[in-house]
Length: 285
Ligand code: AMP
Image (tube, rainbow, N blue to C red; front, side):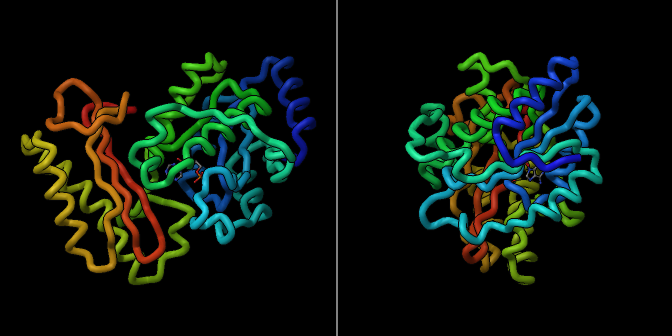
């Protein structure tokens, strides 16, 4: 159990682990760990010999008016939680080690990164794929674990790994929810008691969609307007986007196909807090 801050040390440990033929599992996070992150760590623990989690709040994936400054940070707490869940090493690099002066190399997954979350948060995915690429270079894991909570992120990272022939297998872990259905998120701490209740509207809208789908509805405009009316029934909620897309190109669909996975995703503001959630019909991403 160790917290590693410096890139050269992380690289040399990873090299040694690989030379000992240990399977490395990697869980990248921005900290403020909750049961969702810990579920990724648990999957990594099951599948790998050494589990490394990173904690790095990545400025490149935040927009100028987003919550980079106020994002919750508590490395000591994160480390304690992670280590009790069987994480072997934490990699918590400094900002200027990840982005040294003159940093000018970015990874962009074209097209996919401008849609859905990318349309609302320009530049977000460029920040994500760049930092994930760098972290994977440093940790050189056999497996890297990502939550389906951020479905578009998973789709982009898988595409990056395939396109650039990166030697890592991406493992996708289902969404961990509170008992009442709210998807766990580090941003849930921003919610007031009233907003926390209102936040259930995301899951309610997705449940409505699934119920209609199970009843035979395949028309996306009907499904979307039904979900929209659920969101609109909650006065504290403001819909950012709501989309039904395929999972390969993230194109909006008119009709849900019977033989292709379909992503239903949405983002909703509760006052200043922006929450996302999704379901996948007909398979997995
Ligand atoms: P973050 O710290 O928000 O960057 O998230 C780190 C990883 O945890 C990402 O792969 C997320 O998709 C995943 N994650 C966050 N929340 C959840 C959740 N409720 N269930 C499953 N995975 C999650």
